[in-house]
Image 1 (cartoon, rainbow, N blue to C red):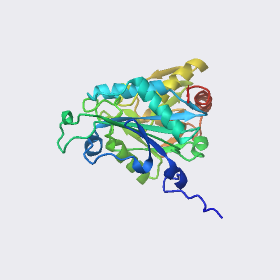
Image 2: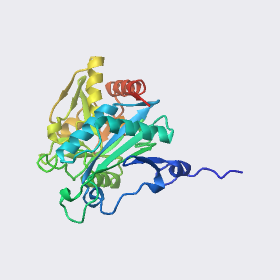
Image 3: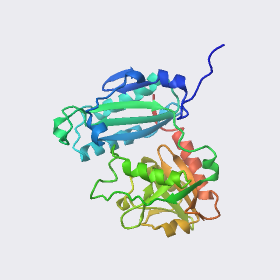
Image 4: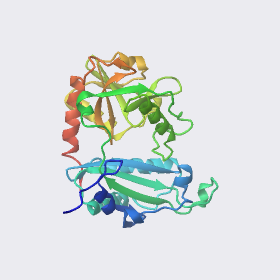
Length: 307
């Protein structure tokens, strides 16, 4: 009788872990052979960048947009990519094919590479890149129907003068500690403010509210990433005839909104129904949020780069 399949703490099948293939610096290798040096500056100092990408139904959603953003992050950090954009796109598709998945999540990471124990990035002659393909479940399925309860974190978003929120760097400790706060408070997600007290984003998602039929989200200048999913919501609102605009907002604006929802590549689009124990609207996912969620699901399963 065959041994039953077992899952690890991440909910990932043990057999999947054993068979997972990783793209590492130009080669597809087994996960057990995917190793980086202890002198890699991505490990030592968070000196690197990443992208999270989803694929559905045999298609990678917004592949080019994600890789273009990866290159913009690299440029901002003076990290010279030794691969062309087209080569990175093909490496991503190659990794998906090697893992035999039809739906899943891609984590693409570029580090400064091997250097020494000093900060000097110019002592790292060659960047390193690895691509992971796996399944992902960010929130339990029922929360997409019932909505998330969120708390405000005391941990603030870094100022743009420190590090632009548009750079998806490996230095994510700020978000990690905010996530810890939220989990300790019994919430699945945490709202982060900027130093002026305005809403920036959640630990991994952009924030939207609905007020009198209008969709509103903070401008990226208030400390949020201009997310790919965020951009798709603007497109969907235009297609559906829903007014959408940017506005600096305080927590009061979320407390008194008719609806709210969050967006992110991993989270997709999920309603937020409570913030700091205050019900948003009637405390249930609202009609505009649900309409956008359904439209997003249809789009991601019908558009994208075939692999």
